[in-house]
Structure formats: structure tokens, C-alpha cells
Image (cartoon, rainbow, N blue to C red; front, side, top):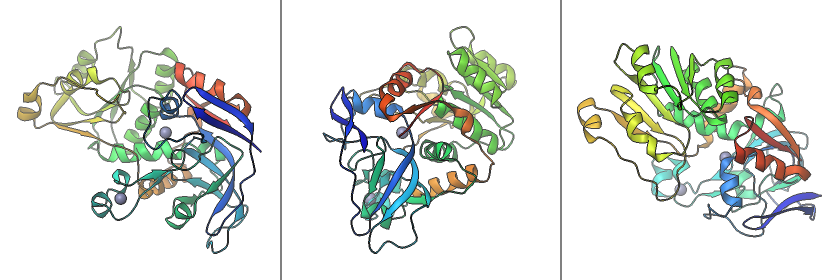
Length: 345
Ligand SMILES: [Zn+2]
Ligand SMILES: [Zn+2]
């Protein structure tokens, strides 16, 4: 079978590898779709090192079909359609005990410590099967759409931490796949108005088609003024930062109404710092929060929302690449062209 093997930073080769054999408690799935994520780019470029080993197969946004079942596995059989929750928590550390398994101190992940989805067949470790990290998906959900459940689950976590009030006004910075998922969730939460800021015309157009009320080009339009106009000078209930630019944080805090929430959803470079007027937080009782990764429950919520048709993610997928052309998918993601690229091995 074929796999995209990462030998070292900037050395990713699609080559013939041995077909995985199933061990006790394990499953082997045929990968039907694996999303390309900005984090994959950081891993390939050597900018993200935690949990990464060489050689390995990365890719953590995985959907596929069970083809082999190891001895002792209950509840799965060949033919089952599944999505994979990549983060495997320890269930014992201080954060797991506090119901924050996504922040586990001993977390391991498929696509990092364990081989991931940029290959034809994937062996899922016993621990992942045992802890419920393999989830069946409803029939109406395509494998391609299911491969987006992972980033969507992270957004489900993030939007629940963003205090979006019914009838509220939400500002989202960045209309890439993540920003657009936040747009869809803001609508689910009952936001009356969603304003998006995005320099790429294609992405602004996508935002408007997916229900944004306003999509501005930050190079040409003053976001502060737009927010002021739409809120009679009060400010936004919620601002979600979906791109990792720390220099924006101080200005974004100024967009909030009193008691509003700013969510630093995107990941930043390691030493990123921001300047912030402290009194915005003090006098305005603003909340500055963040969110990272997702739990198994967030993933279940994601399956419920997408599987029921309440949210659809298909319109986010603009490019599909066979495994042999994974470099094209990575290039496209790096350049921010289109919306979401997935690899279909
Ligand atoms: Zn990802
Ligand atoms: Zn833990």
C-alpha cells in the first residue's frame, strides 16, 4: 500500500510501505478522507516538534471504513464507517480529572505519536479503540465531510467558550475553513449579526454565501467603524480570532461591548505576545479566553450537528487530492488558496 512518510522536516515521500496487520484490541481502517490542516504544515516545516517523530505518517483529520478487527474488539465490524478523534487522553492527570481531557498533560495523538491518515490503511491503536476515540458516523454523512469533523469539533469547543448570546453580534477574524466553521456555529447559537474580516476576496465571498451579514477587507475598511455602526456604538458581544496574528489582539479587545468576550481561538507562534489596554478588561469586565483542541464529547456534538444536517461542512471542501499528489494539497493550504483541501488516499 501507499503512504506519505515524513522522514525529517521538509522530506515527505509518498512510497510503498507494508500493509498494517491488526493486533489484539486494534482496528485497521481504510482511509477515505484526511483533511490537510495548518498544523500539518507546521509539522512538515519543522516548526512544530511536540509529539512528532521520524519517520512517521501524519494527518489527524481522519474518516474511513473498518476493514479489520483485532481480537477482543467489541462494537465494531468490517464495513463500519468511522471518524477518528485524534487526541488520546490519560484520564488520570489533574486536567482529565477536572473534565478538561483536551488539555491532558499526558496526551498522545494520532497523526503525532501514532501514525496518522495520510496513507491508504491505518492501524488504530488499542488504547484509541478502548477509550472511544473511534466513532461511527451516520449514513448521510459522506467520508469527505466526516474528515472535517475533527477541526469542527475544535470549533464546537471554541464557540461554546465564546459566550455568544441569542440575538447577539459576533465578529470573526479570518474566513478560512476555521473562521467559516465559527460562522456556521455562531448562526446555530442564534447570533443575529455576524461580521467577518478577511483579506482574500474568494473567502469573503464564501463567508457571505454561508450566511455572514458583512464581510470586510481589513486593508480597505475600518472594522472598528463597521462594528460601531452595527451596534449603535455599543460594540460586539463576541470576537473570535481565527488566524494566528498576535498583533491584532489589542485592537480586537477594543471592539467588545462591556461584558463581551474575545476568544483567541487560533494557535500562535511559540513566543507570540500582544499589547492590550488593561482597563478594557477592568472597566468593561471583558473576558479574554482561548480554546484548544477538543474532547470526545465535543466530537460527539460535532457528529450530531453535521449528521443531522443542522450544519453542513461540504461547502468548505474546495479541493481533493489523491495521496500521490499530497504535495499539491500542502502547497494549496500553505498559500491559503481555496478553502479546505483533503487527501483521498
Ligand atoms: Zn488540525
Ligand atoms: Zn490526562
